[in-house]
Length: 181
Ligand code: HEC
Image (cartoon, rainbow, N blue to C red; front, top):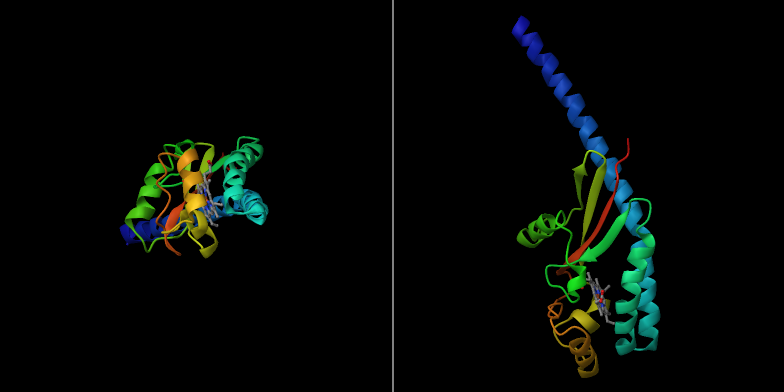
């Protein structure tokens, strides 16, 4: 009886702990998602206003604005960016902690849920897959307009970010931030 009651107590403690851990995970996931929101919105705005000038001009907008935006939002211990398993710009290589998460998304095409990880006692990381949309095909699709292809070749001689279809994994958004208490 004694052993059995102990067991029940431990099962209950285990359940409470598991709930606390998953709640903490949910909290960190919500914070990660919220931190990425302005990054995504700004990138979209930059792309849209670039495309109003034309696709070749929009390439410059992506090139100049994307790093500026991620830098301007990387404050107060927050670091964020985007990366890919097929990079256009090698400067967008994933941080060490993002690499295995990116690999896991590449390896399991049905897993597209965001990932939250603990990076240290007081830092958390959050990663979201980026899926290709129709609007991205102009510069990341199978067939590019010759002027677009030429400009990309010129700026990114090692480009690996073409040949995608709608719905393909294009890469990830990532953010590292101080954990909540
Ligand atoms: C006008 C052309 C253009 C369009 C349209 C475009 N991109 Fe890009 N994309 C680029 C360029 C140029 C870069 C490299 C930017 C840099 O130098 O950091 C890039 C980089 C990226 C990266 C960073 C990783 C890497 O390979 O360097 C991701 C992720 C990405 N694009 C996703 C998308 C998605 C998703 C869409 C559609 C919503 C999209 N792009 C639409 C031109 C474009």
